[in-house]
Length: 189
Image (cartoon, rainbow, N blue to C red):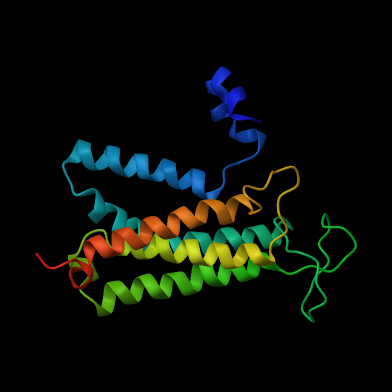
């Protein structure tokens, strides 16, 4: 589908049964839900997003394991010793990129966000955990995309997979949020 199609058929955006939703699209929905809930209940949206950010890697971990079990979103062909042949991935061995992503987007990202929460004053700086999550997820996703086979029929953007392209903006947004919420990084007044 092209942008023109969605402009002419805006309700087609809701047809999730025709392809599912990527993380980046889901993130936009979560941001809208957090903002709506925060405004309606008069709470700081960054306090709420920090709570979401600290637990999201757990869901990402299990989601990537489900991708592996379902034999979907497999990696590029390779000759590494742990390469696997996926039922719908053709006859050549491939990287189990879902497991790489489960580790980096799940285990490592959780450890980083938890460390910022536990061993810094991050819990008293609403938005710092959110920024850490965004930057960390973006980096983990970019690394994972190196090993992942691009989706069939999905065009590259500037030679990059969509996951890599969108994650660049996520890293930038996360770093800006970290800089904004970290007093050591703010310019002196």
